[in-house]
Length: 106
Length: 526
Image (cartoon, rainbow over all chains, first blue to last red; front, top):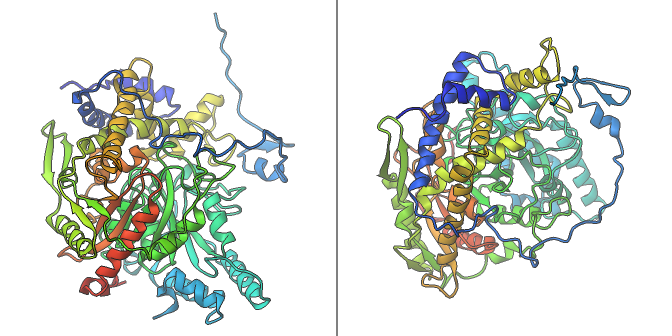
């Protein structure tokens, strides 16, 4: 059976995922993805009525189990410097990043 | 019995009644850790002495001074007659997927290796507020992606205390090994497909996956947000009940944490199990897996030792008055893994987009021309292979042209899996079960390196645990003996939503019913 995720599809995905891979990683990951898809195809044989709803969480969030929303209030953080200090590069309270590429939209 | 080997409820009682101090307990456990753990997991682990190879390696970060300050605070409170909580003086470990203020919170990944958390996860905050002493952060599969702990960027990864050449399971491997090896009375882990129950089974400890929403996920570095459940691991059922009682309950910082009252799980243990209906399903005694050599779906029976342990447990519970119902159908069990391959990957890919080298964590040191290149190089160098695999699959199966075929279909299969549970637990239905009794895993702990790298086979280690994550229902894994190689065997109880009290109650009775069996006397030879 031909691989569902071809080299071209794979490289497109890698770009979308904002990754870079060497050849060895490419080979391993594409092989594993195609094997996983073969396992996923098992789902295709299950007879499913189109009216079957989807389930996003196992449990159902009925009003009696839902916690009330908290008030939408602004709560200042005590030590913003602590948060900024986690950034790989910062200056005067701002997080620094390399040049942001721009492209003209037609 | 030495202090490190006591149970959490014994320690809390002894500390409160001044039979020992929190500091003495802590020092006993720290001494035990220094004896059995070896070097902590590191990014550049280097070479190891043969002595270090024979250690458990549960930890990434041990926070000794922080723990000593906590122990002193508990002892001071007791000396001055102040109230201390249910977990007073009990040392516990935390899977390094929970953030804890002021500590490295790595998720087992290079991309977060330098991240110091600015806040504390709710379950940890609650354990500390109850008087627990946090010992540090224990190892896991990178971002919890695995069932063996071998994918951690921090090596050596944890070893199974019962056989150091075997994996501890995962992803909460360090949690299970730390508890099994006496490096803490309890631990908290997370379970997305079986990540508490499977390592608990492999390491011979108790592991509880609560109902989805029973325990807050605030401060948990997310994997599959609709599947992740924090929960306890411990050496006995009562400690698990005590820990769950503390960490469960609504949390204003996590809207998915439900407002359902938390029962007294410890008090529930004393209830009788006479008349409770416990089911056995043939669908949990056969596993199906995709063999990519032959390109076909293979079926095989689970390890006979594990099957026999389940039937023995049924006999023990039957002798105590429970009613055993056989041939309970759970027809969609076998589709749990294929559906999980889709759903968990979509959620993982979404959750991993935040790691970009901008706000926190690792950033590439390579020269880059612009922001896009910085993202690519940071993520390429910061993530290991398993996160990359999940991102790529998540993006593929959720792409607009494939989402109906894959993602939406998997979510409908999830509905069918949930229905299996709804049918058997329906109080007006044919089965009216209080619990389903199953094996936790198809096999006992496999050798290091035997499965790692084969992402399909590794995932199928969770085949008997993942349906509960899809359905949201609670589950508990209990130690149930050993195979002929001396490796622990685990059995599982599954129940309806918010029935943790009943599962713990049945588990406690099973523990009592087998208390005098010879295997209960075994301890890891480390």
